[in-house]
Image (cartoon, rainbow over all chains, first blue to last red; front, side, top):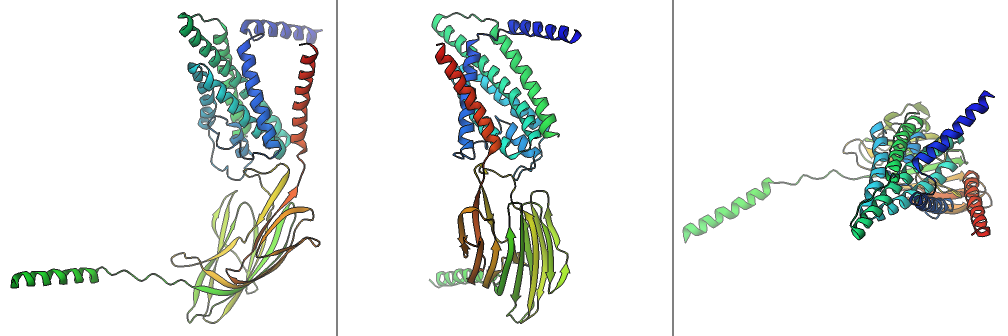
Length: 204
Length: 233
């Protein structure tokens, strides 16, 4: 009975939080998810079929999880020591760049989100196949948090772009609550992602 | 006029003296040694076990001092026998990703030495761009010679022969200075000439089961979403 009571409280809390942060029906969030998942599926397909074998490399400044995983697995060529500052840098840069890209009507935000999607998809295929199950689970957790952070960051970027566009067109500024909520969620997810990646992949 | 001629003569002489003072030193001589190299071993999907036998002859009138270097990407087990006696190699560089060892050889004039190197190391490691549907393995000689002074590469000339057993179901076998016998799954080499060595590569097919499961789950999700949305547009 107590367990059922707690489950009921959690469910009500979840509904209140969702209502508070207005996730449901948010069009920019849906657009961001579609862009990211399209890139993710494309990257995964290209890597899975061995069409493009080096997609995950060279994008460390915007996608840290691949390098952290290879470092954790002591993979050949990844013998540079990783520190907390590297994890911090590689998580904050894509989030800030995605949000800041909204200043150019959201086009750089969309582009960067798509590229991050491709890189993360290609990386995930390689990691799933060549690492043990425990590492797969760790990477899946880190990736889910990183994915959420990027999608919410892109949503903020799109909303900034929309506001700038409306300002240019109608010469008025009207900002609702959603961009602030998504900005806060993105910040929380970025911080959480940094901590989880450092604990699970770098320090482990 | 006389003064002009004298000054010109002095100037020309100073140029000649300046040139003779700046003498270019003679570079050290390059040399090569005759050698017979025999390679035998097996390569399977987990380990490489190879034995190299270097018979190196010194045809010169003075003792030749060399280093024989062994370089590996990753952890390797190494046993070296110089003229039948086991010797401990000197560690040049060692970490989890790269190992380099060397031994010193002093070959007297018109004498030869025999170096037997028994090497074992893992076949595959995670590396950049590894294929999901095939594993590529590349074999090359991990041993080279350098002089003790000036660290110059010492070239060999002679024979490199050997027989290496490779896994059975391989494809895209490429050989340099060797030949692949498909029926026996053996690489045989019998190369005569300068810089006697051989190298080869091959691929072994694999099926990426784990990545396939995730891919099929994603496809199933996409198709079920499409079918549901199609039913209720």
